Length: 468
Ligand SMILES: Cc1cc2nc3c(=O)[nH]c(=O)nc-3n(C[C@H](O)[C@H](O)[C@H](O)COP(=O)(O)OP(=O)(O)OC[C@H]3O[C@@H](n4cnc5c(N)ncnc54)[C@H](O)[C@@H]3O)c2cc1C
Image: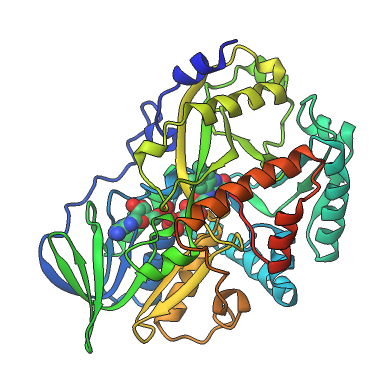
């Protein structure tokens, strides 16, 4: 099988927004801002963080005038390009949370679970059908050294009250049939699978219904502080805002502070053609969980509502100067590499084609979880950098940003995770050198039974790292 040909045959487009014949729910783009106006709250960016911030702000205070400015259209960034794993974790997993915030991990777990419950309740209440499936998620060991890690992970999870069970080789294969699986850990209720396109559009529709104003094609170029307001400028218009929430994630703009803490890491995704009944039954997978493998460079995969397999991850590319843009999205090398891994995992699916391929920028911090900041006497707040776990956490991140701009002292704003920023990435050109070297060391550790070299041990001791 020629993998490159197979990959090239896939449409270079995001399945969630360009699936055949099912784009009727996509909102029409709104005209750009071309005049001067005023608002109580301006939100910059209409991905999940911006949409959840707008929705929560307006529901809490219906009289508040909320305006959302988006450089492209709703969900243009990571929010419609992701795997749709909507997890309770706010900290990119329990182990990462424990390593950075051991004193507050149980609070963070509780807040994450509450956030996931409230997120799903909100979708029900607002009639947003995002194909939510509360399947949980299985992490599989595919190398012997990962089996011990999974045992350890299950023990730690259970100690913290999480509903996670260990699956030995037979039990793992009974859930999903791959010759590569040696064991698994099934988090029974910490994750739901969602359709990110439907979620984005549903949130945006709910915001419009509440009277929130949207301006698309409006890239914010500067924010200037005056005594009575903040002037938010785009190329052709401006808004005098009382409060501003910056929700631009991997773009790390227009507030320069964010660029110190957040870098864009490109992650790649393939979507298969729908599976036949026979192909599906060759996998088992009756419980339809979200799946992942357990190396440092990992794949994540899941079924869509129409029984395609979304297969993503592994390669995590950084481009010098916080590089971001369409030119980084058609990396056939990365797509071909992960296509090869797909058929190693599911050899019984040989002959299955891919319908879509895409990539997107993951906003990453050195602690792999969201960072927060304020400026201009707390009249501006930003929330960004959920790394690869922002579908659920962005609702919570948006809530934190609103607390910060509204001066609310909440349980959230007291957290060290919120108050203390992660270590900044060094400026370029050192940033590029450090990130590329760290990437190569992570790949080396995976090839060496997970054994970390000196560089990764040093980063660990400093409480920093690199992930997607
Ligand atoms: C390929 C991929 C797979 C992923 N898989 C998962 C997953 O399965 N589960 C999970 O939990 N997370 C996943 N993530 C991460 C998750 O998608 C993000 O954490 C989340 O969508 C972040 O939402 P956001 O609103 O903060 O950012 P974004 O969705 O990136 O939104 C930022 C918005 O800001 C706009 N913008 C930028 N600059 C400006 C400006 N100057 N003026 C106006 N607007 C501007 C952008 O156009 C964009 O629409 C994945 C990400 C990627 C890329």
